[in-house]
Amino acid sequence: MSPAKNILRAFPAGPYRNRGFRAFLLARLAGMFATQIQAVVVAWQVYELTHDALALAYVGLAQFLPMLFLLMPAGDLMDRRARKPILMASWGVALLCACALWWISGQTQGSVTGIYLTLLLFGASRAFSGPAVQSLLPQIVPREQLAQAIAANGMLMRAASIGGPLLGGLLYALGGGVCAYAVCALCFFLGVLLLTYVQTQHAGERSERDEGAVNSSSMWRRFALGLDFIRNRPIILGSISLDLFAVLLGGAVALLPIYAKEILHVGSEGLGALRSAIALGEVGVGLFLSLKPFNRHVGRILFIAVAVFGLANLVFACSRVFWLSFVALMIAGAADMVSVYIRGALVQFSTPDAMRGRVSAVNMLFIGASNELGEFRAGVSAACFGPVPAAILGGLCTLGVVGILSWRFAPLRKVGCFEEAK
Image (cartoon, rainbow, N blue to C red; front, side, top):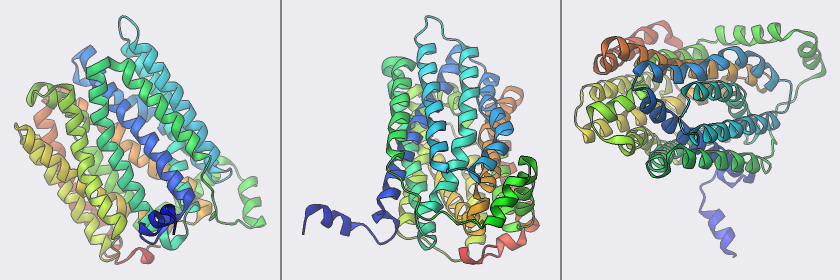
C-alpha cells in the first residue's frame, strides 16, 4: 500500500477524506490567518498613533457599518448565484485592503483616517465572504457529515486565531505594519488559489416553481421571506440572539491593547499572546469536537457554555497577573468554541439550502454586531468608565443575557440532538 493511502486511512471516517473539503479548510485557514494578523496589527497600530480608547472603538465600527448595509443584498445574492466565485471575489477585495494598509504603513506618518477608510472597504468584503463561507460548507459535504465538518472547520479557524495574533504581534515588533500586511496579502492570495480546488457536490436542487418565485420577487421581498423564516423558528432565532447579546455586551477583545499596554505591561508580543489565548482554548475544544462530536442535550449545553464564557471574562476583567489573564481568556475561548459548534450545527440543520444565503447573512449580521459593534461598545465604555469597570460590566451583562434568553427561548434550551432542530 502506498504512503499516501496509509495517510488517508489514518484519517477518521467522515468529511476529512473529501478532497474538496480539505481544500476548503486550507483556504479558510489562509483567509483566517490574514484576518487575525490584520486585526491585531491594526488595533496596536491605531492605539500607538492615538493612545485613545475611543479610536479602538472606531476600528470595530468601521468594519461593522458596511456589513450592516450590505449583508441583505449579499445574502440574497448567495441564494441566486454560485457561492464559490462570490467568496473568491470578496477575498480578492480583502487582498487589496491588505495592500492598502501595507502602503499606509510605509508612509512617514501613518494615517488613522486612511486605516479607517480601508477598514470600511474590508468590512464590505466581509459582508459577502461571511455568508458565502457559511452557506458554501453544506454544499461540500453530505448532510450526515455536516456536524463533524462544522467542528473541524471551527477548530482550524481557531488554530489560525492562535497563530495569527502571535505572528502578527511578532511581525509588527520586527518590521512594523509593512511586513505584517504583506503576509496578510499573501495569505488572501493563497486562499483564493485554494478555492479553485473546491467542488460543490451537495447543492440543493430548486424546482422551476421555486426558481420562478425567486426571480419574480424583489430583493426586499426575498430577504423578508428569510427574516420570516428565522422569526418563526425559535431555535435559530434563540441561538443567534444568544451569541449576539452575550458577545456584544460581554466581549473584551477590543480592550486587550489597553490591558496589554497599561494594566499587564506586556507590549505588542503580549497582546498577540492574549488574543491567541482565546483561540488556544477554542482549538483544544474544537479538535476534540472534530474527532468526537457530541449530539445530546445540545440546547442545555449551549446555555451553560455561554455562562462559562461570561464568568471567564469576569476573571480576566479583575486580573492584574498575565498568566491568570491568559488562562481566563483560554477558558472563555473553550466555552465559546462549544457555543459556536452547537449554534452552527443548529442553524445549518434547521435551514434548507435554498434559504441558507439569507439565513447566513442574518447570522453574519448578528455575529458582526456582536464582534465589531461589540468592540465599539467596549471602547466607548472604557472611554467613559475606564477599561476595568467596562470589562466587569460586560461579564455581568453576559450572565444576565443567559438567564433571560434561557427563559425566553425554552424550545432552544430543551433541544436534545441536532436532528430535532426545526
